[in-house]
Image: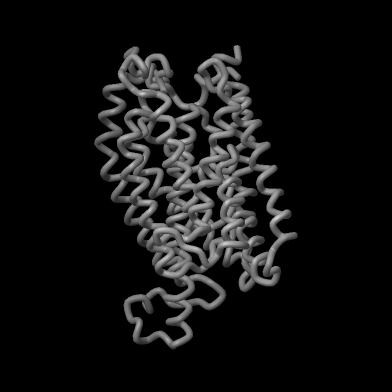
Amino acid sequence: MEAEVTRVAITPLSSVQHGRSARGVPPVQQDKGRAVHLPFILVALAILLGAEILICTTYGAVHIPLHALWHTQSLTETQHIILFTIRLPRVLASAVVGAALAVSGLMFQGLFRNPMADPYIIGSSGGAVVGGCIGILFLSQLTIFGFSATALLAFLGSVLTMGVVYSLARARGRTNVVTLLLAGFAMSTMLSNSTYVFEIFDPNPASGTRALNAWLHGIIGIPHWSQLGVTTGILVFSMFAAYPLMRQLNTLSLGDEYAHHLGIRVEYTRLCIILVASLLTAAAVSLGGLISFAGLIVPHVARLFLGPDHVRLLPVTALAGAIFLVLTDTFARTLFAPTELPVGVLMVFLGGPFFLYLLRKSKREYVL
């Protein structure tokens, strides 16, 4: 029974091959309708994201009128600094982090064919945090090929963690979802708590430990424009790299053997997906620290509306993830203003019940 566990979660494209979708709707008609609406959905989400960014920059401990964004000469010097040095970079950073985590979650869910796969749950975020902590505490001034050692170590930690989790979950050519979730939880918990060791050996406790705590609680800081530009570039590059993998991910949902017969290099494709998803996770962690469940909720909701085609899901998930985290982070920093609630803490309260809902649903609808 456990050998069949990887058939769970996402509506398999094999149902399309047999002429019916999971809901009993002829797949051609269903796909045409969704394809027609996709451009309108993308335009609507893009407009919503732009409007949300403008509105959210005006909210905070110091309120700035919305019309002042079009008449910046009416702003005082303090308001100008708050708007363009503090709030706008942070709001844009939350959009980038949300998009990166959502796309990473989409890729992990598709790869493991399970709706409960998430960068945090399966340990990818934990590995990135450990790598990033090493960079923050010991190599904060080091850059390699123009990239900070913190970002590179976060990427390396994410990839290595995913390699361990994936190898533990693979048995006889199949991915055991139960083992995957257990191994991911174990790795995430172990890595998150191991950061205490770094605090002991912190050469600069005053600043290093404070930055470390911000990472662990998921506080989106105020990035420099250069850092924000590099992270945005990584997101755009990863999106372009992910696009050709989405069609192959659709084929992988039919099963490894079927994908192999169609000419897909299964293990090579898996490795590419893990690398791109880990790069996205590392980029998100470098800006926002450990933010859980953002990569769980958004892809799952997008799939409910658009179906299982990862090609269509990719841009929608990115925009929806950006919208979701911008709103969540704004709520987190204004709820108890001037004191800020870490967005990672708020996401635990939102994502925890959602994960339990998926777990309960899996007992009722999936074979585990």
